[in-house]
Length: 454
Image (cartoon, rainbow, N blue to C red):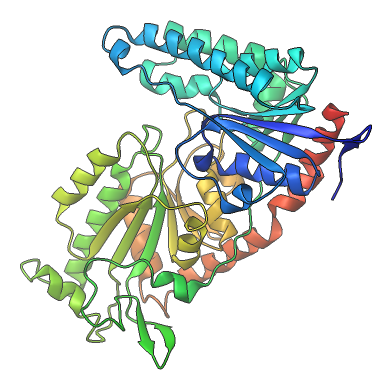
């Protein structure tokens, strides 16, 4: 560990997230690396909402300062533009109060972007007032996210773009999540000091004990057995005719078209019914209770666990109810940071619906899935191939029909005779082993942190 000391004082970093720190794993990883690998005291300034990982909460070198979220629902009904301006002004004042007065003087600020307004301006001013440097971690471009709701040609989006570019160029250093984004920052934004940093965080899990915690309501009455497992002589065994467990994490926002997954699930349900000659008039419980009786299926039942919080969650939950799926079940939930990798480690396949507003970022959920050795079917966009390698650690799809085809192909003969799925599993495990966060952070991030902080 590179212990950061200056004139007898331990160096300090401030990690700034204008959002829920519990839903920003990358900034949590930065905080842990700053404390454990750079030997710095770390102040996290962020909104509350979800608990960050237990490793952060128990680390004596990490101090979390929770800001209140700004809600202006009444004014929104009068003027959307006025709401945006007033909210940004209030957030700016709150940020300055925390960054300049509430926390000890840091040597370096590391700020998540987006959101860009007013975060970048507030951090720049705070770094000037306190004699510190600041680094931007570019997860995406904020103006492209705003453009999803207003259109790229809207005046507000153009102003946001100018603001983001102007203050982004004033940073002393930068990280970014894709090679394509680094090229964009270098060539079109004039930010030629960015460091490409994308790596998985390796999670550890107990797959058999964890899978017992995630079951459908179609669980049989016997307390010693579930649709996934059996308890025999004090040991847990995975059933050979268990359902396949598919996980998707979503923020329930417009840049993730969840309807693609619902349509693919419906197609899988109908195709399996036709292949197996099952009558949809049959009682739904009978379709699942056969698992208890040891019946083996060429195509397994599917259980989708959808994790995440966001504005469109209730809308899609209502759509799921209307589908009347028989061989596919959905469950939505929000998991603590410690539980999420356990679910990933217990799953058979991950699905990513992220398509990127800019076409230049990558879904961090896929990074976490690979960290647990979980293969992925991911929505295709311009730079996703930097992460998902077709027929190696995952597959790509553009339509619900393509995703349904992939589900049918991967799960045929599950769990023992699904060679394509097993091959992707090996590739995902290799990806998780070859690109570790701590190694990449020490190689690319630590030198930049030491350079700008010296």
